[in-house]
Length: 344
Image (tube, rainbow, N blue to C red; front, side, top):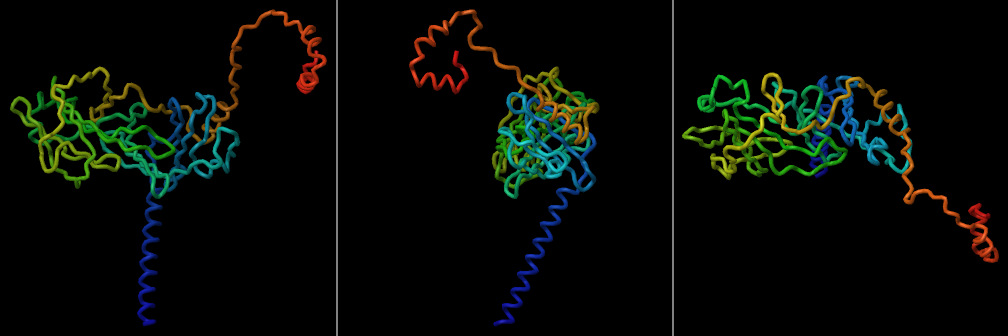
């Protein structure tokens, strides 16, 4: 009996050791990566700064600073522990005792465009996956990647030789709320477009609990068949455009009125951006930790001008001599005025 328990104990110990080994490997893989050069540096948006730093190939870091109080104070809400060691945080009513420490990893979405999924890990149970892309030192959240067509799609496209242009299947991603210091809600839908000359079709995908399939789905238009992905994996979820085992697209908006004038494309037309304005702008003249701390100090040293008085100033005579004469025997009022230094 004792020998049996000893064998079981050794097996359990080996199993636990193996699990610990896997956790260590996973932790190392999260940190052992190189940030793309286009992403490294300080990014500024309307309500925040985001800083990607590559100390070395094994330890990339991210910091998120919020522009609180209508932009008058910069709060260091998420940063590596090393930041406060180099530049201590000044505690006040606008700061937290300990900033969040966020681990992250990047997954490339397309080799033909500067697009990634940014996986922000806040704890063992909380994470947010943010699809992002970069074009001309600007970061966007609402973008579409040109998917390679099947043979049938190429045959059906108007001016099929122009597939390097805007024609074809544009695969979307789940549009997030941005790069935040806390977990955000999952997006229920994503959108794809199929552009065929002057005809544009809008396709809605929704979160599905079906197993992912690399099958195609299809729709017909003017006796032609067009194929798209049946399922799309985005931000950690599986999105579908069909019901069950069907391959016919369920939600198709035909002849969608697409405004090319508002869309942005990269040089080889593999990336399409529909955001009206960028989410973040890269600060080209500020790139380092020291530059970031300088921004924080300059912002937090500003003093907001005093608010305008509710009532305009006037030369009204309050007759304080008469008021004091009337109140001179009121011990309570005299004591208050004495404390306030307003004895006239």
